[in-house]
Every structure is written in structure tokens, then in C-alpha cells.
Image (cartoon, rainbow, N blue to C red):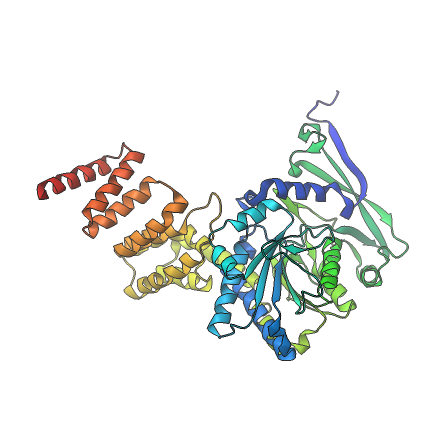
Length: 528
């Protein structure tokens, strides 16, 4: 029986070094084409884009800045550049710079110059950041700048707003780098150890013919990945820092396949040159941190989610830093994400406040621990009491993303809740509003805050947040109807009539709204 066209396989490539695979080109094309929409229910990002992790990073950076100034008093005369690699949506950036700026201001450290650089390789994301209302105040304060930066290419990095080219002369203080869910999406090489010998895993890609268009795969999730082995008998990279790591794996691993984050290490090498060999890196990603965790693994699996990602070999990155005179702290094993901290040009033993922050916010209650707790409690939101919800929101730093999942539960509980819990939640609503970072096709937290105040009969506050929500939600029946109800309760009958009529224009079938319009018009006529 002959294969049908739907059965025919197309060979995309054969026996390719993994870091040279067409997969990485497809990955970049996906992000460039999708732009900000990549983060709308496709690429996972919440786990590293929430107020909790931003606060952890802010405490680490704050401790590092204080340590560096103590060792180098002249540091206050130069900016501390903090660069986020693969910024994506920009939500983490907003939470971080907001938190760090508030902390520096609260402690009177006004003389500290900070420039947070949001970077990505695609102009589409930068255009989104430039126009985002939440970032505007920090742009005006000159706390934020943007840069086109491709981790796979050694090209100059120029800040778009201030037209500053990052260089050893500009980067007088160490360059701080954030690498959240980015090391897992840049190029890797793949290897295997078998009976004491080291092999390279060469990649072959195939897909159904129907998945091809203009000689390119349409859907990456329909690509099949196969590996062929080829023994390595000499120094693979020709770099003693890297080849020594491979040699360690050859001796230490019994039987395993593993990834080597060569794209990330090449980017780190380039950034070390730019920064006079002074780097402070914080990274949260999925991956492996020990030799033991790298042993007895099958061939690397690829997770597709619009784009694709790999497990990060944090142990290799750590070894690279230590081999080249730097330092590394790898969080003890947790399920899920790992947070790692790396240093070049200094060691953590020289930085006491940084070390305390690492112990507290990486090894202590870490982003991984927070997410584990959050995931568990989120499974039972619909059974939680209001005081439990309030406590979780406090832990989460009044995160709009979480509140949107339980807003209906909150409003269903307010009538029976104690006044202390209601007052705590009401007093923290402005914090949550300040954490609002609008994303396309997402619900508006400002509207839900209005609903909360509406439910507890604080109508002035409800009106305030409903009005703040209008630029984001547009002309919606529920918005105008709720506004009108609140205005009616406050005896603002003329304004209420206007908004009931606006609601009726959107949904002329609403008998209730029609009744309100007739009632208010009749009352106005009687008074007139």
C-alpha cells in the first residue's frame, strides 16, 4: 500500500550539531512574528513574572549595590546597569524596577544611579514597552532604557532612549544580568556518556509533508526529533574552561545524555568582555544543578508551547564561572524551577549583604517555594475563607494575576466576612492597582477592584476604579451599569441616568436597565 500525502515525511535536517540546528532559527522566527502575543496563553511566563520573585530579585540587587559601594565608594558616581535578557512581556521588569525604586527612595539612597535595561532581539516587543503606560513614569525618571540584544550574536548593545553604547568605559560598576526563562530557549549542544566514553548527539528533524509550507515547518509541535551518536576523542570546544566540564561529566556520569548551554555561555563570555569581567547574574529557570541530577537521563526532550524550551544545565554554567575565577550559588534541589546566582570579578564571600539576601531569598523562601505554595492553595480557592485569601494575597504581594482568578469568590464572601478582613483587603486594593501591568486579551484588575468596593458598599471608591478601568475595557455594558448603580446609591442621579443610557445603548434588550432609565427620567421630571 502506498503512503498517502498525509503519511509522507519530510527530512528537515540530518545529523546536525544541536546548537546549529534549524530549530533555533524557527524559535527566533516564532518570537519575532508573534511579538507580545507570544505571551498571551502560549509561552508560560507567570512563574517568573510576579511581584514575589521581583521582590526577591530586588532584595538581592539592593544587597549587592550596598556591598559594592562599601568596597568601592566611588561607585556612587557611576550608574548601576541592570540588564534583563529576553525581557518578553515586560511584566517582570515593571514589578522589579517599581520595587527597587521604592526601596532606594524609602532608605534615602537618592544618590544611587540605576538604569534598568529591558532587552530583546525583536523590535516588536520593544515597541510594546515604549508605549506601555505602566512603564512611562520610570522612563520619565530615566530609570529604564531599552536595547536590541541577540544572545546568539556578538553585536554592540546601544541603549535606545539615551543612545549609550554599553562598553567597558560605560560599565564602571558590575553589570547585573537577569536571565529568567531565557537560558532554556537559546542554543544548546547535546552529549551522552556511555561506558566511560563521551559522545555527541547529532540531531535529525522530520515532519509530515502537510506541515510544510514554503519549505518551512508550519507547526513546531509536529516536528519529530531523533538523535545519532558520534564519539568525541579530542577537545570538543578548544576552550579549557568548557572542555574541562565535559571531561568531568565523562568521568562522573555513569550512563546519561545531557545538554550543554553553549549559547548562554557564549553570551556570558561576550557580556564579561563588555563589563570588565564584572558580572552579577540571577537566573530562574527549569534545569539541573548537580552532577547527580544529570546522571541516568534519556535523550533530551523538547517542550513545545508555541515556542520550545529545554532543561538548563545550571551545573555547567556554575562550573564555567568557577573555572574562570568567578563564583556561583545553586539553590538546593526543588521540584520545578531553580534560582541560581553567578558572579564574575568577585566572590560571594566578599559580599556579606548579598550573601544574606541569597540565603533568605534563594535558599530560604524562594520563588520555587512560593510557586509550590501558590499552586497548592490555588487548587482550593473556591473553598478558602476570605481571611485565607487575604493572607495568600499578602504573601503574593497583591498580585493582580492571582486576584483575577478568585475575584468572584471574594465578592461571594464579603457579606459574611468579618470587618477586620474586609478592612485589610480594602486598604491593600491600591497596592494591587499599582501592580497592574496591562497585557493584550487579559482581564482588567481595575474593574474587579471596583466590583470589590461596590460589594462592600464603598461606592465612591468603586466609581473611582470603574472609571480607571474604562480605557482598558472600553465601552462595556457591565462597566456603565455598575457605574450607574453606584452613582444612584450616592444620589448622583443625573450621572447615573447618563450611564444607564450608555449601558442601554450597548444592550437594548436589558429590561432592568430600561426600567432604571424610565424611573430616573420620571423622577427628574417630577422634580423639574
